[in-house]
Image (cartoon, rainbow over all chains, first blue to last red; front, side):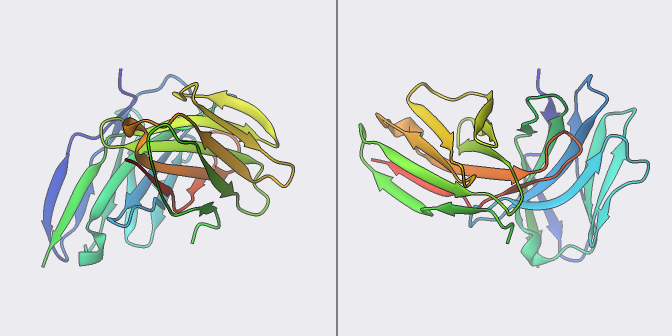
Length: 115
Length: 113
């Protein structure tokens, strides 16, 4: 079973609009971390935002916020006031506890910002 | 800039050859994780080292191996290369445990012809 599900393979959004990228996850571990990464066409993996499973408040980093709904196992990324430079691939990812604390990635959402 | 460095940025080689990818972690990070990003498999975890010792293995082929040196830099060795090994290879470093962030290097794009 997939541990990270991103149901939107691609999205087109008008510049300056807000964007929500969906992500659901599956884990039985009470300690986990959720991440969003941006991968532009140049290929590098840029860390955007992190949410710990014990965090009470939703994480925010500038124009990025993570809408964390623990009971629904949902960790959607919200980008406010989108810009042309936001066009990229976005990956939701999860890290569980234990010795093997690798990151597990979703398949990604390709976001296109239209002028 | 994540503080994680990877060399080379691009590598083009032929089938059957062997290559070495290098990663230097952020200052203070003891762990190095290697990931492979291919078109058909997406992003997959290969192997993790912590302070010189192998800690976890993922979907790493037997033709691939890695090590972490005393100065904490890591090398990923890929041998008997096949066309399907063409991919973007990332290393990442960061704190330990689920509640820690992980930062990625710029990646090495390997093309096997």
